[in-house]
Image (tube, rainbow, N blue to C red; front, side, top):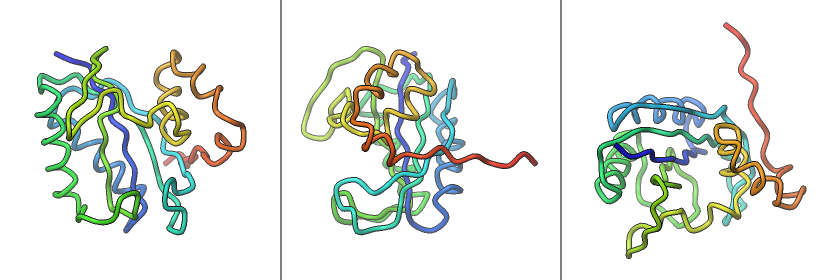
Length: 156
């Protein structure tokens, strides 16, 4: 079994519900071992679009990296993602951030994720579930970290 870290994001439809549903759906691919809170963040790349809801989850999985990627893409399609522009709005986005300690790159996949250490919307929730990433989160410019806000969900 491998430990895979997945980044989740959405800014179309009901983004909070989309991310929560995606986290639950990850259980189809293995055992959910950790998940972050939900975070609201400014759009990255193409900024003229709605804010995103982001989270990070970890699963223990028997799937190899390429098989995991294919499974995540199938989940995205099931949850309403349609092809669109790079960094554009989406109902759900699932990215492999880390896969054990593997370093890997081909045309479709790079592990660790190419922009992992540049994106506050990934590093802030990742540091919540893995303290070893706090140093990377804290190395981001304060103005960048300020674009990410934890969503406090009222107790039911």
